[in-house]
Amino acid sequence: MTANPVAQKTVSQTEFVAIVAMLFATIAISIDAMLPALPDIAAALSPEAPNAAQLVVTSFVLGMGIGTLFAGPLSDTFGRKRVIMLGSAVYAMAALACYFAPSLELLLAARVVQGIGSAAPRTVSIAMVRDMFSGREMARILSFVMMIFTIIPAIAPLMGQGIIALADWHAIFLAYIAFSAITMLWLGLRQPETLPATARRPLHVASLWLATKELGRHRVIVISTLVQALTLGALFATLSSMHGIFEARFDRAETFPLWFAFIAVGSMSGSLLNSRIVMTLGMRRVITVTFAAQLGLTLLCLLVIATGQMPEFLAFPAHLLWSIGLFSMMGLTMGNLNALAMEPVGHIAGLAASVISCLATVGSVLLAIPVGLAFNGTVFPLLAGVSVLLAAALALMRFGLRPA
Image 1 (tube, rainbow, N blue to C red):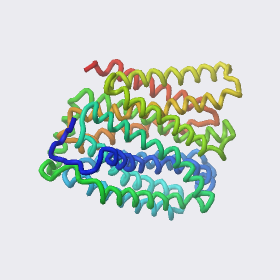
Image 2: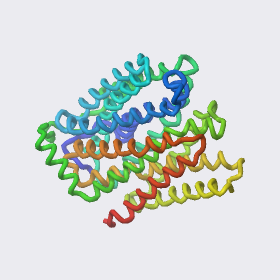
Image 3: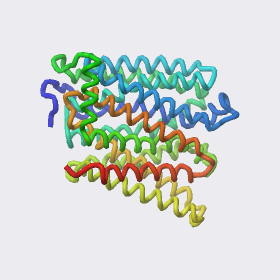
Image 4: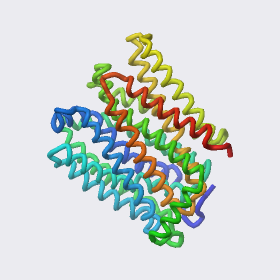
């Protein structure tokens, strides 16, 4: 179903999906390529508190959450492409500041600004999809986007480790600048503007406030936003703890990027499966069943570990299986949750994408930081924290939303 008949696509659907996936990938590469660098950052900038290096991940996510509040409304007024390119320029300048940062505090401040810049490609790309599609068709397109997007997490840690081997962790930020430049060149040359001038909205504080209040009147938007915060909280808590778990619990720090790539490739099945079943089963059912399955797997792992029944030779394969399940869960839920939330508000798609993403992302950081900082060299704090977040998400989906 085409949502905006005025906006005309002059690139194929395949290329459109690929461009949006690259815009999404700005977030993945900005987080995942840093994971192998966390021990080096801790040794260089916070040797007395190595867990503080995890904040390099969550500070970026926090900035991204703040930035989403502005990116969408600006794109409703000035157009999608112009705002994406402005945000990407901020992202690149902040990456350069990260490269020269002499202390952890300045590095974290620059990462927040980098996250603010990254909000434009991440949030406005969702509005671009909503400009062109709606409902289950939008969910299907986002599934294809997520399927391509998962290639980046598979290679980002390998890229980060390779850069560290050739130079040091600072050079990762130069790679971010190069990636952003390539993406903006592709967007600028190939993708037409999806929001025509006749469909743009004036940037008035009063109208923004009225539109934001409109979002609050839709139960499906409120529930979807809360569930997204819980889901992303589980993801970011896992990413923050992941390298430490591989290093301290399983003694596999050197091969972490390869195992992370294995997990990322395995999780592509989630997006592929969603693209095949969402049109038949519907978004709510897919989301609910997925949460129930991953919660059951998490509780099973917790029970086996807590009772001492986990054989040591199975501990690592079990953790890999659990991680693949968690990352697959993203492909089966996040696109559907976004599509559910955006369905009633196509007329204010940019603002809606901003407010929803801002609340969900900032909320997820507040949920993820305590879980990540609770890391004690074992998988138990992570599994316990994720089980609580998934149980809350499942309860909201099961009892907060009535079937359409």
